[in-house]
Image 1 (cartoon, one colour):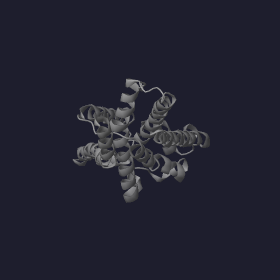
Image 2 (image 1 turned 90 degrees about the horizontal axis):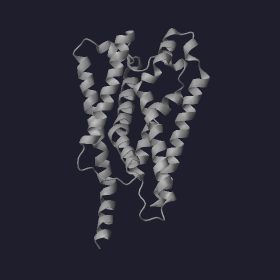
Image 3 (image 1 turned 180 degrees about the vertical axis):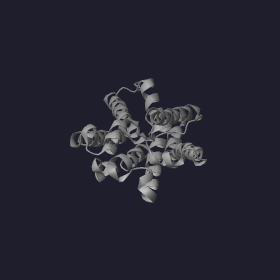
Image 4 (image 1 turned 60 degrees about the vertical axis):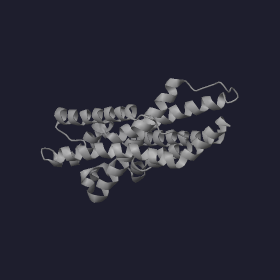
Length: 243
């Protein structure tokens, strides 16, 4: 199975390089603080509060974690008693299953649905002054192949209990919701225009509920894929151990 380690390590390295290069380019290409467009300056001051930014930052963190874990396994593959430190395995699995997978599909699905319907709801045209089409696709499209690659090339088992993962997901979403609300009460600005339109209407809590249920749906979707891809492989390994 060493081949899978190298395949994953390639993807982790590519993910880090692509995201870091994109971040460096966006920082170097435009000074958002002194931009002539006031909307761009506001966008720049709030960029780290965008859920999209949280997501690609977590993809970098996860890739570093996966790269470290797979490297340790390859380095110690001749030692049959070696196991990657438990905290590292746990962090890697929980980060991916409980947070990164559902968050990535939420970003991709919600962004492109609203963008194609009416981009004013999610990414107003003034952002094009500082966000190129390539950068836009890196942070809103490239993120999906990253998590799909992981689920296809890393054998996993469906957990007996989903409570820990779901609690991490709920905490992550509640934390972001608090940032969203804090930004509004601090500066009178909704990070995403759709919330400005729906605020103080029945559709505001409805949208929040849709997002919550979408995240839970995306979370469980991964285990359907895992069963399809890895159930037979897991059964074969168990049969070999018994024999």
